[in-house]
Image 1 (cartoon, rainbow, N blue to C red):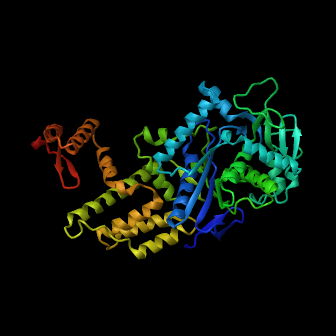
Image 2: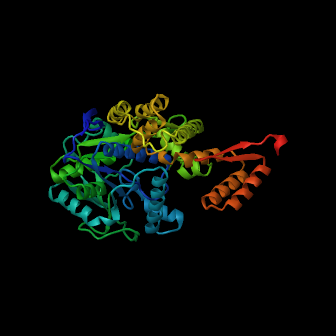
Image 3: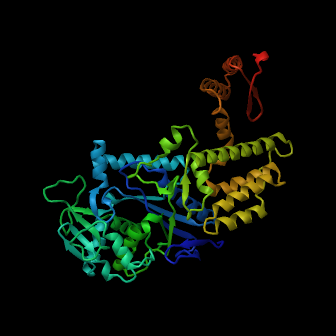
Amino acid sequence: MPVISLYNTLSRHKEEFRPLRAGVVGLYTCGPTVYNFAHIGNLRTYLFEDFLRRVLEYNGYEVKHVMNITDVGHLTGDRDMGEDKLELGAAREGKNAWEIAEFFTAAFRKDLATLHIEEPKIWCRATDNIPEQIALIKTLEEKGYTYRTTDGLYFDTAKIENYNKLSHLPLAELREGARVEKNPEKKNPTDFALWKLSPVAVKRQMEWESPWGKGFPGWHIECSAMSLKYLSGELDIHCGGIDHINIHHTNEIAQSEAATGKKFFNYWLHGAFLNIAGGKKMAKSAANFLTLDNAFIKPGINPLAYRFAALQIHYRKPMEYSEENLRQAAEGLASLLVQISALRAARVADPALKNAEGVIDKKFSEKFLAAINDDLNLPKALAVVFSVLKSKLSPADKLATILDFDQVFGLGLEKADAEAEELRLTDLPEDIQSLVRRRQSARAEKNWAEADKLRLEIEKSGYLIEDGKEAYKLSRLSQDKK
């Protein structure tokens, strides 16, 4: 296998990636809490994780990708205080918690598809793995890492050495940060809930019997239980956003290593935030909550412009959202699609190249591989694409080389002709767009009479449409030809 270098949050260094099992990578990515739509800040993390998976697969690895769905136990305060986010979402939407989880899980999967993010090989819901979480908590209790309070069972972080080894922050600083949400029964501010008891005289929508009483699991225990269940022996890479480092992932490591006595994942990778203009983190709790729907789809912007924009910023660097940045990304993607479409048209137009599949250029391929294997340096890899476009390679070889690279980029460049056509249409009045699409459908169905009729309607509206072997050309008629 080629050498891949990844920045490991655990060591704060780039390290050569070496999986526990040759040729196979166990990858766990923290999934959404399904109480609301994912915002585009969340989706930047999933884009980075998708690029990572594609890089690993491009290098020949089989990637066993597991992602959790948090449908219980994540409270509004990450330190085990506040309301359960699913219960809160249910009250907001006038549905039950199970319906809320199902609805927003489906919405999340739709967002993944829209952005060409590959789904994990294994989805695992917290509510489907309650027995595994209870079993892991029992192990921790038997080993003396827990204590009871009136509201549940807690993990005693003072009994763990190097509790701060992922965050690299002084313990005093972690403890001070944990004092924001006060619980007088905690032995240490950083202690966290393993099992929360249902409030007295309150019937929760999601609760289960346990050795400690009726209640529900804490947020952190689900990822430990499910990664140990589905990736046993393959705990290679664990990913998430940088906001998970100090609490969620730190607590996962503490409880997992306490229970098993073994290292919990060898590589920890974290993606930086998407900020709105001015450097503020995007969050559901703030007034800057943008989704794919309201930021891209409703305004008529190709959502893949966001994927294209994410390729241009290294995953460990903050990315800034603004309308100007969005416009530039959309224009850049449009330009690339048109150039790819032109390569295909040029290949077809040349009799010597018409049936040529093209050859992946070795020189450019080596540069591309070196870039992606250097801690996912996708901006540098994207620059290789533009070098290919400017090169003296034949259209067929350029096309073959760039489509090979798109296995990592995931922009769907094999469909560039159709995408370029849509981009041509978006600058036209809606009635002309409709006529052109109807005519293309008629031609596809070989309904020539209908196609001719629609061509005349297009001409009466002031446009000339000319058919080529692979595509049509649309131009505005001069006033004297109308």
